[in-house]
Image (tube, rainbow, N blue to C red):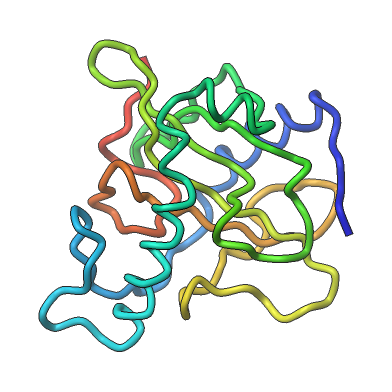
Length: 183
């Protein structure tokens, strides 16, 4: 089941995702080296599984370092930079709503996030997955549960941020990154 949203719905979704995400809590996550995406020496079996999936996601989304490539692949830029006064930022969401469905495919994130560097240039920071809830079991990222909802969009859904390209001191799967600032 594929769902399509209008550009207005896309902008509303991104704004609401940012506003509501601060209410989500992240669960305990495994210990990963955020620079190499490898499990640390004391990593749990879940961390090892996450590291393998992180490599898959990294390989599939690395081509989006250039926003032009994201646009060519159907991602639409939202001009607003999402930031929370105490939690940090998410940056700019580029969403491909043609990918939003009820299946989690780690190779095709529904959203790519860009954060401005100190010169204002957009740099790929993270990916975000949106999975519609049509009664199937909740998705997980190698054992990491997705957040329930996160935004009042027209249908029930799950979401998950994965900070692959800009380390997040708050955690690999935490929605806001304290090191992301909006100009």
